[in-house]
Length: 202
Image 1: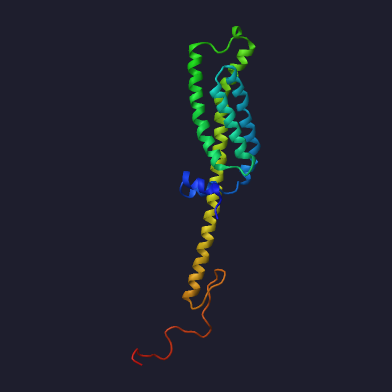
Image 2 (image 1 turned 135 degrees about the vertical axis):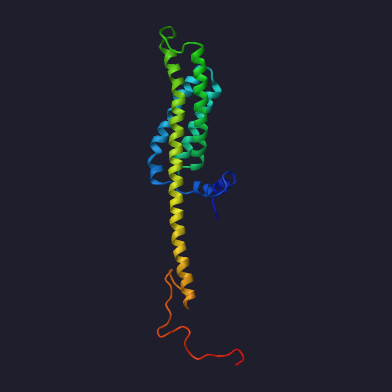
């Protein structure tokens, strides 16, 4: 009986990739958990700066993203969520960087006239795309390593099953069943194509 998460992955991502997403996390993924939590927490100051600039949708998006990231890594490292976060944060980092570049070309974002408070807020806004891109890279690296780890285990299992099947077939061809993948040997004194011949009409 497959878990519900596996069924959902099969709907969204058919094929062997979907089954790999539901596998247990590797030691590398577990070791990257503190770094993922740290990078997701970097989005919260950027969200605060967006709220100060009355960008409520952008701030709410970053808080929601940080919450989903924490949910994805707090348990068994949900690779499906990490894949989604890698794609969404990567694209959003590009769009946010372009928007900030347009604003910077229109009016100065830093300077003594703006005051220290606004300089810090604008600095956090410019740090936003960097934090998003860093989160996306880490999520993608964990996902790719997990995928290669699962597929390497599956290939090893397929290879072992192939050897077992070969031994079983060889045992039946040699005149006896095989156990544990070891071909059965013919009885001693057996010589093929020897002995008294018989006709079909006899």
